[in-house]
Image (tube, rainbow, N blue to C red; front, side):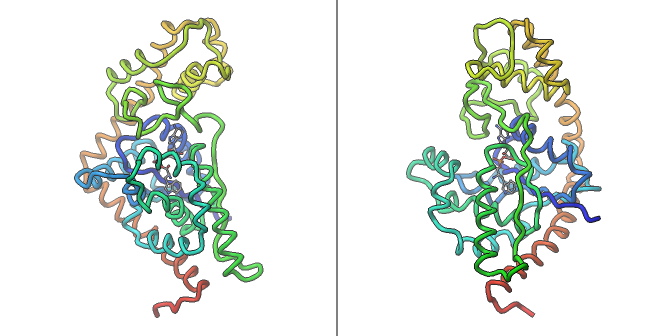
Length: 336
Ligand code: TYM
């Protein structure tokens, strides 16, 4: 039986944080042996907000190295860079022409990011989800493992598939395959360390709001020491009045590998002074092997380049076939 296909990606904007790791990459790693996986570094998405050309290439390598350091295994998975496979931009254009403008204007993430950009909102920011749809659809992906914040973009992708198949497919012969989101219950929405009602995010101006995968142990300690808590003794999950408490207990559960039930029992009578050192130790111990492996990968740039070269070849092969199929369905004369 052929394996189902998975595709996902992360933008090379700054460092990866625990939200990216617990919401997405950890799940890629956990499920990878069951699927045929494609993981890309989505560097075309990275320029939808103002970016720094001096660091874009280095950031792209960092994210690819972190995929490997977090446990992506090339036996099951292909790692590549989005901009190395030109079919992504080309399919995005074709999809643009069948996607109604108001669908894009309704996207929550567009509205949030546009607010922050003021006068500088690019057409690319509005178009971001169409490029994301192209990423997914080029590989006929069955599943897309992401954090909760991406669910709406995958629903939009499904709507684009329905529209394109309806307009250009034949009965019982769809042009594109509809993907499903793969969102886990725990870790799908990791919250900020400085405000438990806000998502942990790369774009938060305060670095104290997030733990980055490459933060050294003393910085992790400082961030947890200073993170927002509440004055209540006894730590419990799922109390809507205590968002920070729920978030920090969830982080502890996922980083320590203990069950939610065990953590609930362990922490029910604790104060923050007792809990914080446990969370610090769990975070530092969990990230150490990732940081060590990252270092050894970065010390061998030739290896990383060869991984991305092989990845591009495999990705391009599949992507070009899909692109040809879509162009054919839309009525283009195909190059011979
Ligand atoms: P990006 O780089 O913003 O986020 C990468 C992944 O991290 C997840 N994530 C979180 N999960 C839990 N808690 C958080 N606080 C948190 N913050 C981020 C995101 O849900 C995402 O899974 N648009 C995508 C990139 C993309 C993509 C794709 C994903 C482009 N093309 C195709 C899947 C398939 C994004 O938001 O990246």
